[in-house]
Amino acid sequence: MAWHSVYGGAEPVRLNKFLAQSGVCSRREADTLIAEGLVRLDGETVLDAGRKVTPGQHVQLEATAKAALSAVSILLNKPTGFVSGQPEPGKTPAVRLLTAENQQGAGDVPAADLSLPPVGRLDEDSHGLLLLSTDGVVARAVIGPLSELDKEYRVRVRGEVTPAVVEQLRHGLELDGRALKPAGVFDKGRGRLKFILKEGRNRQIRRMCELVGLRVIDLQRTRIGPVRLDDLEEGRWRHLTQAERDALIAAAAIAMPVA
Image (cartoon, rainbow, N blue to C red; front, side, top):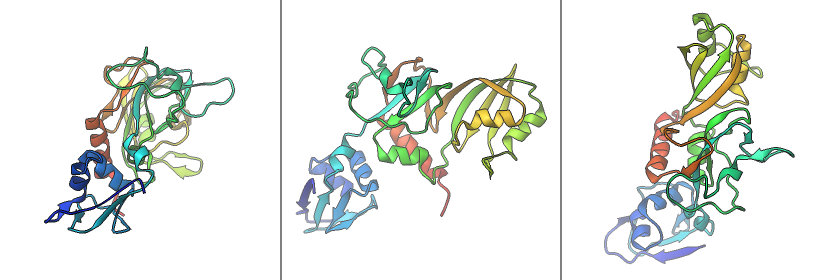
């Protein structure tokens, strides 16, 4: 265990407040630790952020809590020609762009040896918003098995875009023998489409367009849930703000299907 303490107060107190008052972390960070299953109360793992600690109870943190508290989340406006994850020989990973020269905004530059996995891949031939994070809570909110968080894309295509084609893209297509979830697809004119998806199959938009006789010539991701690309310039990066992290997690909780 990384840290432990016995609560000596006279009245019950919320667990996140006790951790904050003990100088372990902020209340928000305490909520993260609890959601990650890294806090124990009298030996029992606690997953309820509203749980109260009563006088004499023993609070413990798992040894991995330190890593959770130092989680890093980066927003990158990825250009084409860079791969999101572990590259094959001859390919350039997007993390190479995380330099001081390319930074937009405040915060430390991630260490060169820090593993920053992509939270939702973006093809080498596509560009736009790429989220890289060591934060398990953020990853589950965006790409967890129950996540319904939507992503928005601007797409340019070659081929005839008709109302029937748009309707096909919205409903009724399948990839790899499995039906696709309904998609938001909007014709913006002059071969421009807006896609809003709640899933991320391999090269999904390109393959959807091929099924209806269209060829994608440009694809940009502009939004992941409530987090937008906005004025982040291509090739530049910045840290995910606490407000954006909170909004992502809140949006994922609202969109999560009821079990």
